[in-house]
Image 1 (cartoon, rainbow, N blue to C red):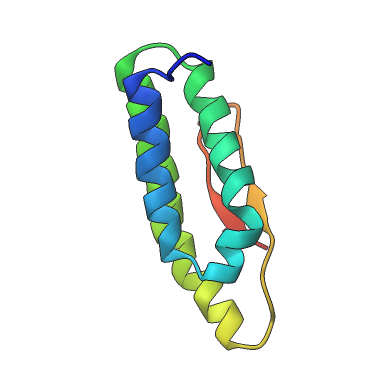
Image 2: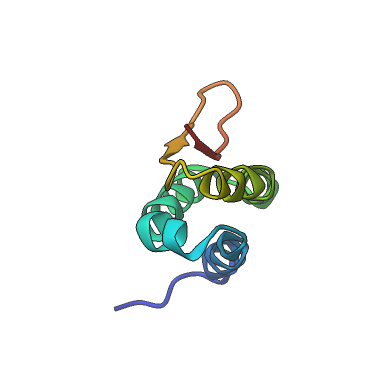
Length: 98
């Protein structure tokens, strides 16, 4: 199996590290799915700046949504499902709990 390009490894590594802001139960359930969506978006774009923007938006989404997930768990709601938004106009990824 060929080694993945450096940019791809860096993007997925940074994203998976950021996913540690979510509770462990949430990560166990959604880590792989969220990472695969990021990787699909990353690969669909061309150019370092656009790919970097995809990663930055994904990281910002994690930082915005992780406290909400923790709040939902503390409120006894259980593990919220993320809604993966891949808007055509903005072409970004967020893991927004519903």
